[in-house]
Image (cartoon, rainbow, N blue to C red):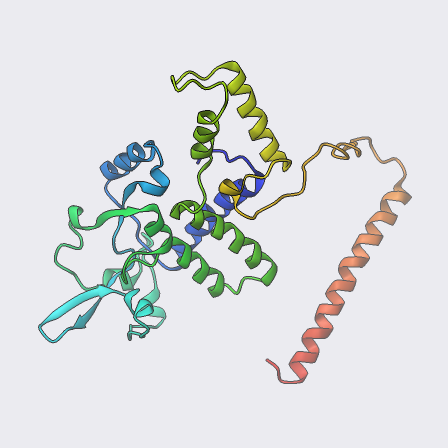
Length: 289
């Protein structure tokens, strides 16, 4: 992953990657595609405006297929289609069905019905735009961002954290759909519109310097670029007050001072624990649990 211009963007993509790993584990998803297609995706990613206009190979069905009957014989569909079509399909449940073996494969996946061609290399993936990968395609591929939102709901994410993660997901979704440009696209535009650029593919020292200054200003929050960040604005980042307190490593010779500090913060922990225990006892006695 490339370094972004602002701390917010770096945090957004870092959170997205981590949450995607949690989604794969919690929902038992399969995102495998042939390594040759991974290499092809890397080649395509280097094309101009690939994020908005390119197509990439991605797995068609991330979850086991489910068996249905369309009146003309057995038909297999994605389990996600029930969510898209507003229905709920009955599936097996129970601890035994959800157990995993030593290889981490659940019984549900091993017992999933076989769909002709579903496990063949050429039929396990298809080309998708970045917007489709992120937000979904048809009723069989829900998209990574909706899956992340479903996971946050599943773990009952707190309101404060959810609000910030939603901002991260909105930024990534807008980048994938082309509503916001990528840093690479913005840099190309900056160079093309620079007075010193002669449309000869030559980046002079003056152009490079002005570009670096602009990137620095964006990162520090002193320059707002709507086509890059939308309505997001950030407080200016400065070094003022950053190093006022040195992390001293001198030995504490006054034991009384050390004990007073420990007593102060140990007391805080005891007070919080006592409050939590009283709250627990009240709920237990009232039958809330």
